[in-house]
Image (cartoon, rainbow, N blue to C red; front, side, top):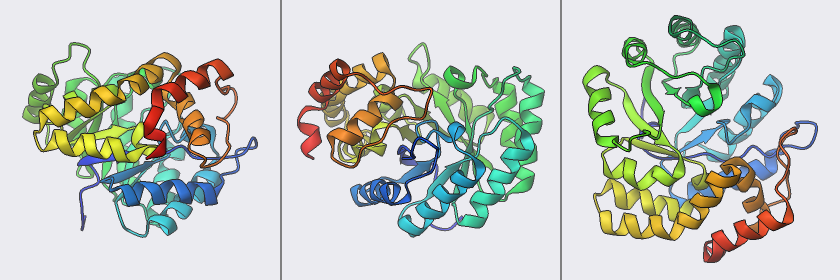
Length: 298
C-alpha cells in the first residue's frame, strides 16, 4: 500500500455520532475527523468498538465510511472496522469499505455462539477473499469473549492481506516478552489497545497503539505516543501521569461512555450513546470534567 502504514504509530478511534434511530451525523463526524488529522495522528480507526459499529446498520456504516473518506482526503490512512456476526455480512462490509475508499480493515470475531479457533480462521479467510485491503486482527476478548491462540495468529499471518494484530494489554505486564513471541511466530505488526497502557506498550517496542482518548483529545495522546516511540521515557511517563485521572475514569465507567461526556464538554456537539447504553449521570460527568481538567482547553 502506498503512503504511511495504517498499522504503525498512533491510531485514533472516534465515536460515530448518530441519532436515536441510528442515523449517522456525517457533519459532526467530519468535524471530529478534521481534529484528528490536524493533530497529527498516524491513522484513524473508524467504526471500531468506540465507533459503535455493532449498533449500526450496513447502510449507516457505509454512510460513515463515505463521509470519512471525503473528509480525510488521504491525509492519514483510514482503517475501517468490518466486524459482524455473520461471515457474509462481514464480507459485504469489507467490500463496501474498499469500494468507498478505505485504506485498511479492522475486524473482531463477533459472535453469539462462541467460536472455535478453526471457525475464526475460516471467518477471517473468507473476508480476506472478499477484499484486497490490508487487515488488522482485532483481539478484544473483553468484548468478544474470544481469545486468539498463538497458533491461530501464526496461521492467520500466512494470509497475505492480514498484516497486523491489535492486542489487549498483557495481564502480566510483559509487553516486551509478548512482542518478542509474536514477532518470532508471525510477521504481523503488533499493536495494543487500553489507553492506560499506551506508554508501556510503545516504550516496549510495539508498532502501534490504538487509542480511544486519541479519538477525542488527540493532542496529548499524539505527544505521548511520539515521546514513547522515540524512546523518551521521561517525557512519556510525564504525559502519562497527566492523563492518569482520565485513565481512571475510563477504567471505572468505560471509555465509550466517557467519550460521549467529553464530546459535550469540548463543545463539539450533543450526542448520546446508542441504547441500551445509557449516558453517564451528572455526578459522574463532574468526575470526568475534573479528570480532563486543563486538557479541555487544548
